[in-house]
Image 1 (cartoon, helix red, strand yellow):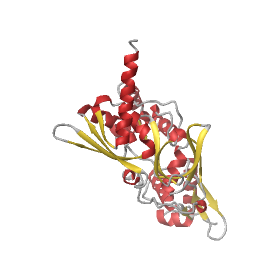
Image 2 (image 1 turned 180 degrees about the horizontal axis):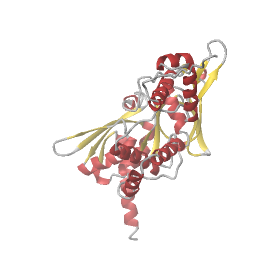
Image 3 (image 1 turned 60 degrees about the horizontal axis):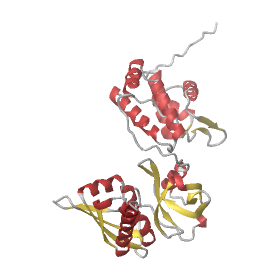
Image 4 (image 1 turned 30 degrees about the vertical axis):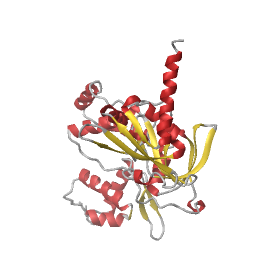
Length: 336
Protein backbone atom coordinates (compact mmCIF):
# COMPACT_ATOMS: atom_id res chain seq x y z
CA UNK A 1 0.00 0.00 0.00
CA UNK A 2 1.35 3.40 -0.96
CA UNK A 3 1.25 5.95 1.79
CA UNK A 4 0.08 9.48 0.93
CA UNK A 5 2.18 12.12 2.63
CA UNK A 6 0.77 15.60 3.06
CA UNK A 7 3.33 18.34 3.36
CA UNK A 8 2.16 21.23 5.49
CA UNK A 9 4.08 24.43 4.92
CA UNK A 10 4.99 26.13 8.17
CA UNK A 11 5.52 29.88 8.11
CA UNK A 12 5.57 32.04 11.19
CA UNK A 13 4.40 35.08 9.21
CA UNK A 14 0.62 35.45 8.92
CA UNK A 15 -0.82 35.51 5.44
CA UNK A 16 -2.25 39.04 5.74
CA UNK A 17 1.08 40.41 6.89
CA UNK A 18 2.88 38.47 4.14
CA UNK A 19 0.61 39.98 1.49
CA UNK A 20 1.27 43.51 2.76
CA UNK A 21 5.04 42.95 2.76
CA UNK A 22 4.79 41.24 -0.62
CA UNK A 23 2.98 44.28 -2.04
CA UNK A 24 5.78 46.52 -0.78
CA UNK A 25 8.41 44.13 -2.18
CA UNK A 26 6.98 43.98 -5.72
CA UNK A 27 6.54 47.76 -5.83
CA UNK A 28 10.16 48.11 -4.80
CA UNK A 29 11.60 45.47 -7.18
CA UNK A 30 9.38 46.18 -10.20
CA UNK A 31 10.75 42.98 -11.89
CA UNK A 32 11.15 39.57 -10.27
CA UNK A 33 10.61 35.81 -10.56
CA UNK A 34 8.34 33.62 -8.46
CA UNK A 35 11.35 31.62 -7.29
CA UNK A 36 13.16 34.77 -6.06
CA UNK A 37 10.16 35.91 -4.03
CA UNK A 38 9.45 32.43 -2.70
CA UNK A 39 13.02 32.19 -1.38
CA UNK A 40 12.85 35.69 0.11
CA UNK A 41 9.60 34.96 1.98
CA UNK A 42 10.41 31.36 2.83
CA UNK A 43 7.41 29.77 1.08
CA UNK A 44 6.94 27.36 -1.79
CA UNK A 45 6.66 28.59 -5.37
CA UNK A 46 3.05 27.33 -5.41
CA UNK A 47 2.18 29.48 -2.37
CA UNK A 48 3.94 32.49 -3.87
CA UNK A 49 2.03 32.04 -7.12
CA UNK A 50 -1.26 32.04 -5.16
CA UNK A 51 -0.16 35.17 -3.25
CA UNK A 52 0.67 36.99 -6.47
CA UNK A 53 -2.72 36.03 -7.90
CA UNK A 54 -4.34 37.51 -4.78
CA UNK A 55 -2.33 40.70 -5.16
CA UNK A 56 -3.46 40.96 -8.76
CA UNK A 57 -7.06 40.56 -7.62
CA UNK A 58 -6.49 43.38 -5.11
CA UNK A 59 -5.50 45.72 -7.93
CA UNK A 60 -1.71 45.41 -8.09
CA UNK A 61 -1.00 45.59 -11.87
CA UNK A 62 1.23 42.59 -12.59
CA UNK A 63 2.04 41.00 -15.92
CA UNK A 64 4.27 38.07 -16.82
CA UNK A 65 7.09 37.92 -19.34
CA UNK A 66 7.94 34.60 -20.99
CA UNK A 67 11.24 33.40 -22.36
CA UNK A 68 14.82 33.84 -21.20
CA UNK A 69 15.07 36.56 -18.58
CA UNK A 70 11.34 36.46 -18.07
CA UNK A 71 9.40 36.73 -14.87
CA UNK A 72 6.89 39.20 -13.49
CA UNK A 73 6.82 42.95 -13.83
CA UNK A 74 4.79 45.69 -12.16
CA UNK A 75 3.18 48.20 -14.48
CA UNK A 76 3.92 51.90 -14.03
CA UNK A 77 0.47 52.50 -12.50
CA UNK A 78 1.29 50.85 -9.19
CA UNK A 79 -0.90 50.20 -6.15
CA UNK A 80 0.62 51.31 -2.90
CA UNK A 81 0.58 49.13 0.21
CA UNK A 82 -1.91 49.80 3.02
CA UNK A 83 -0.92 52.53 5.49
CA UNK A 84 -2.44 53.05 8.92
CA UNK A 85 -3.39 56.54 10.11
CA UNK A 86 -4.41 58.03 13.42
CA UNK A 87 -7.80 59.69 13.57
CA UNK A 88 -6.35 63.22 13.36
CA UNK A 89 -4.05 62.19 10.50
CA UNK A 90 -7.08 60.89 8.61
CA UNK A 91 -8.94 64.17 9.20
CA UNK A 92 -5.97 66.26 8.04
CA UNK A 93 -5.55 64.21 4.82
CA UNK A 94 -9.25 64.35 4.00
CA UNK A 95 -9.54 68.11 4.48
CA UNK A 96 -6.28 68.85 2.68
CA UNK A 97 -7.79 67.15 -0.40
CA UNK A 98 -11.25 68.55 0.26
CA UNK A 99 -9.89 72.11 0.24
CA UNK A 100 -8.75 71.78 -3.38
CA UNK A 101 -12.32 71.54 -4.66
CA UNK A 102 -12.46 75.35 -4.96
CA UNK A 103 -9.98 75.23 -7.83
CA UNK A 104 -11.64 74.88 -11.24
CA UNK A 105 -8.49 73.13 -12.52
CA UNK A 106 -6.08 70.75 -10.81
CA UNK A 107 -3.33 68.43 -11.99
CA UNK A 108 -4.52 64.83 -11.62
CA UNK A 109 -8.01 66.13 -10.77
CA UNK A 110 -9.85 62.90 -11.62
CA UNK A 111 -7.30 60.83 -9.68
CA UNK A 112 -7.52 63.14 -6.67
CA UNK A 113 -11.31 62.85 -6.61
CA UNK A 114 -11.08 59.06 -6.93
CA UNK A 115 -8.52 58.86 -4.11
CA UNK A 116 -10.71 60.98 -1.84
CA UNK A 117 -13.73 58.74 -2.50
CA UNK A 118 -11.70 55.62 -1.72
CA UNK A 119 -10.24 57.15 1.41
CA UNK A 120 -13.67 58.19 2.70
CA UNK A 121 -15.26 54.83 1.81
CA UNK A 122 -12.84 52.84 3.99
CA UNK A 123 -13.16 55.02 7.08
CA UNK A 124 -15.15 53.70 10.06
CA UNK A 125 -18.72 54.99 10.31
CA UNK A 126 -18.00 57.14 13.38
CA UNK A 127 -15.15 58.92 11.56
CA UNK A 128 -17.36 59.44 8.50
CA UNK A 129 -19.94 61.08 10.76
CA UNK A 130 -17.27 63.32 12.29
CA UNK A 131 -16.07 64.38 8.85
CA UNK A 132 -19.62 65.05 7.65
CA UNK A 133 -20.10 67.35 10.64
CA UNK A 134 -16.71 69.03 10.13
CA UNK A 135 -17.43 69.78 6.46
CA UNK A 136 -19.75 72.53 7.65
CA UNK A 137 -17.33 73.84 10.29
CA UNK A 138 -14.03 74.24 8.42
CA UNK A 139 -13.16 75.33 4.90
CA UNK A 140 -10.33 76.83 2.83
CA UNK A 141 -11.77 79.41 0.47
CA UNK A 142 -10.01 80.74 -2.61
CA UNK A 143 -11.24 82.58 -5.67
CA UNK A 144 -12.94 80.09 -7.99
CA UNK A 145 -11.97 81.23 -11.45
CA UNK A 146 -14.12 80.32 -14.46
CA UNK A 147 -11.01 80.00 -16.65
CA UNK A 148 -9.79 76.45 -17.16
CA UNK A 149 -6.07 75.66 -16.82
CA UNK A 150 -6.14 72.67 -19.14
CA UNK A 151 -2.48 71.71 -19.47
CA UNK A 152 -1.30 71.46 -15.87
CA UNK A 153 -0.20 67.82 -16.09
CA UNK A 154 1.84 68.35 -19.28
CA UNK A 155 3.60 71.38 -17.78
CA UNK A 156 4.30 69.53 -14.55
CA UNK A 157 5.66 66.50 -16.41
CA UNK A 158 7.86 68.75 -18.57
CA UNK A 159 9.23 70.60 -15.55
CA UNK A 160 10.14 67.34 -13.78
CA UNK A 161 11.69 65.68 -16.84
CA UNK A 162 13.30 68.92 -18.14
CA UNK A 163 11.43 68.73 -21.46
CA UNK A 164 10.58 71.66 -23.76
CA UNK A 165 6.91 72.35 -24.55
CA UNK A 166 5.36 74.04 -27.58
CA UNK A 167 2.44 76.28 -26.58
CA UNK A 168 -0.08 78.65 -28.14
CA UNK A 169 -0.19 81.56 -25.70
CA UNK A 170 -2.44 84.60 -25.53
CA UNK A 171 -5.31 86.29 -23.71
CA UNK A 172 -7.72 85.06 -26.40
CA UNK A 173 -7.71 81.89 -28.47
CA UNK A 174 -7.66 83.88 -31.74
CA UNK A 175 -4.75 86.10 -30.67
CA UNK A 176 -1.94 83.75 -29.71
CA UNK A 177 1.77 83.39 -30.35
CA UNK A 178 3.49 80.06 -30.86
CA UNK A 179 6.29 79.59 -28.35
CA UNK A 180 8.66 76.91 -27.16
CA UNK A 181 9.19 77.07 -23.41
CA UNK A 182 11.13 75.14 -20.77
CA UNK A 183 8.78 74.91 -17.76
CA UNK A 184 10.23 75.19 -14.25
CA UNK A 185 7.06 74.16 -12.40
CA UNK A 186 3.49 75.22 -11.72
CA UNK A 187 1.92 77.01 -8.78
CA UNK A 188 -1.48 78.39 -7.81
CA UNK A 189 -2.15 81.90 -6.49
CA UNK A 190 -5.45 83.66 -5.96
CA UNK A 191 -7.30 80.97 -7.93
CA UNK A 192 -5.02 81.20 -10.99
CA UNK A 193 -2.33 78.73 -12.08
CA UNK A 194 1.06 80.01 -13.19
CA UNK A 195 4.02 78.42 -14.96
CA UNK A 196 7.42 80.12 -14.76
CA UNK A 197 9.48 78.99 -17.74
CA UNK A 198 12.32 79.89 -20.03
CA UNK A 199 10.87 81.23 -23.29
CA UNK A 200 12.97 80.47 -26.36
CA UNK A 201 11.08 83.12 -28.37
CA UNK A 202 11.93 85.95 -25.93
CA UNK A 203 15.25 84.37 -24.87
CA UNK A 204 14.43 85.08 -21.23
CA UNK A 205 12.45 83.67 -18.31
CA UNK A 206 8.75 84.49 -18.30
CA UNK A 207 5.73 83.86 -16.07
CA UNK A 208 2.81 82.30 -17.97
CA UNK A 209 -0.80 82.10 -16.83
CA UNK A 210 -1.82 78.54 -17.59
CA UNK A 211 -5.43 79.44 -18.46
CA UNK A 212 -3.99 81.50 -21.35
CA UNK A 213 -2.24 78.46 -22.82
CA UNK A 214 -4.57 77.22 -25.57
CA UNK A 215 -2.52 74.20 -26.64
CA UNK A 216 0.54 72.42 -25.27
CA UNK A 217 2.58 69.50 -26.56
CA UNK A 218 5.91 68.05 -25.49
CA UNK A 219 8.54 69.13 -28.04
CA UNK A 220 11.30 67.03 -29.55
CA UNK A 221 14.49 68.02 -27.72
CA UNK A 222 16.38 67.62 -30.99
CA UNK A 223 14.56 70.68 -32.37
CA UNK A 224 16.13 72.96 -29.73
CA UNK A 225 19.33 74.31 -31.27
CA UNK A 226 20.54 76.09 -28.13
CA UNK A 227 18.97 74.36 -25.09
CA UNK A 228 19.00 76.15 -21.74
CA UNK A 229 20.12 74.32 -18.62
CA UNK A 230 17.36 74.72 -16.01
CA UNK A 231 18.50 71.86 -13.80
CA UNK A 232 19.14 74.14 -10.80
CA UNK A 233 16.16 76.44 -11.35
CA UNK A 234 13.01 75.66 -9.34
CA UNK A 235 10.02 77.41 -7.79
CA UNK A 236 12.04 78.55 -4.77
CA UNK A 237 14.68 80.44 -6.76
CA UNK A 238 13.33 81.15 -10.25
CA UNK A 239 12.96 84.86 -9.43
CA UNK A 240 16.73 85.20 -9.47
CA UNK A 241 16.76 84.11 -13.12
CA UNK A 242 13.64 85.90 -14.23
CA UNK A 243 14.76 88.95 -16.19
CA UNK A 244 17.69 89.35 -18.54
CA UNK A 245 20.04 92.26 -17.89
CA UNK A 246 19.67 93.60 -21.43
CA UNK A 247 15.90 94.09 -21.54
CA UNK A 248 14.89 94.85 -17.94
CA UNK A 249 14.86 98.02 -15.85
CA UNK A 250 15.23 98.56 -12.13
CA UNK A 251 12.06 99.44 -10.20
CA UNK A 252 11.90 101.08 -6.80
CA UNK A 253 8.56 101.79 -5.11
CA UNK A 254 7.81 103.32 -1.71
CA UNK A 255 5.02 101.48 0.14
CA UNK A 256 3.00 102.54 3.16
CA UNK A 257 2.08 99.95 5.78
CA UNK A 258 -1.20 99.44 3.90
CA UNK A 259 0.72 99.30 0.63
CA UNK A 260 2.87 96.47 1.99
CA UNK A 261 -0.31 94.52 2.77
CA UNK A 262 -1.67 95.20 -0.72
CA UNK A 263 1.61 94.06 -2.27
CA UNK A 264 1.60 90.81 -0.32
CA UNK A 265 -1.99 90.20 -1.48
CA UNK A 266 -0.90 90.63 -5.12
CA UNK A 267 2.69 89.44 -4.93
CA UNK A 268 2.23 86.81 -7.66
CA UNK A 269 3.07 89.59 -10.12
CA UNK A 270 6.42 90.14 -8.39
CA UNK A 271 7.65 86.70 -7.28
CA UNK A 272 11.18 88.04 -7.79
CA UNK A 273 10.59 91.34 -5.92
CA UNK A 274 11.99 92.14 -2.47
CA UNK A 275 10.48 94.49 0.11
CA UNK A 276 12.62 95.93 2.89
CA UNK A 277 10.71 97.55 5.78
CA UNK A 278 12.08 100.37 7.96
CA UNK A 279 11.49 100.74 11.69
CA UNK A 280 8.77 103.27 10.85
CA UNK A 281 6.88 100.61 8.87
CA UNK A 282 7.66 102.10 5.43
CA UNK A 283 8.54 99.59 2.75
CA UNK A 284 10.79 99.87 -0.29
CA UNK A 285 10.05 97.42 -3.10
CA UNK A 286 12.98 96.68 -5.39
CA UNK A 287 12.60 94.54 -8.50
CA UNK A 288 13.27 94.35 -12.21
CA UNK A 289 10.66 94.47 -14.96
CA UNK A 290 10.73 94.44 -18.73
CA UNK A 291 10.72 97.91 -20.27
CA UNK A 292 7.93 96.74 -22.59
CA UNK A 293 5.72 95.97 -19.56
CA UNK A 294 5.81 99.46 -18.03
CA UNK A 295 2.17 100.20 -19.12
CA UNK A 296 0.99 97.02 -17.39
CA UNK A 297 2.81 97.79 -14.13
CA UNK A 298 1.64 101.42 -14.26
CA UNK A 299 -1.91 100.01 -14.02
CA UNK A 300 -0.78 97.71 -11.21
CA UNK A 301 0.72 100.47 -9.03
CA UNK A 302 -2.07 102.91 -9.90
CA UNK A 303 -4.47 100.45 -8.22
CA UNK A 304 -2.62 101.01 -4.93
CA UNK A 305 -3.70 104.67 -4.83
CA UNK A 306 -1.64 106.74 -2.40
CA UNK A 307 -0.32 103.60 -0.68
CA UNK A 308 2.42 103.22 -3.34
CA UNK A 309 4.70 105.88 -4.82
CA UNK A 310 6.93 104.91 -7.73
CA UNK A 311 10.44 106.32 -7.29
CA UNK A 312 12.03 104.82 -10.41
CA UNK A 313 12.21 104.38 -13.34
CA UNK A 314 11.08 107.77 -14.59
CA UNK A 315 8.96 106.20 -17.36
CA UNK A 316 6.94 104.14 -14.88
CA UNK A 317 6.54 107.08 -12.50
CA UNK A 318 5.24 109.34 -15.32
CA UNK A 319 2.86 106.63 -16.54
CA UNK A 320 1.26 106.33 -13.06
CA UNK A 321 1.05 110.15 -12.73
CA UNK A 322 -0.69 110.32 -16.11
CA UNK A 323 -3.33 107.86 -14.91
CA UNK A 324 -3.87 109.91 -11.74
CA UNK A 325 -4.29 113.13 -13.76
CA UNK A 326 -6.78 111.47 -16.10
CA UNK A 327 -8.76 110.16 -13.11
CA UNK A 328 -8.94 113.64 -11.54
CA UNK A 329 -10.05 115.07 -14.89
CA UNK A 330 -12.81 112.44 -15.11
CA UNK A 331 -14.08 113.46 -11.66
CA UNK A 332 -13.96 117.18 -12.58
CA UNK A 333 -15.91 116.54 -15.77
CA UNK A 334 -18.54 114.57 -13.85
CA UNK A 335 -19.72 117.88 -12.26
CA UNK A 336 -20.30 119.50 -15.64
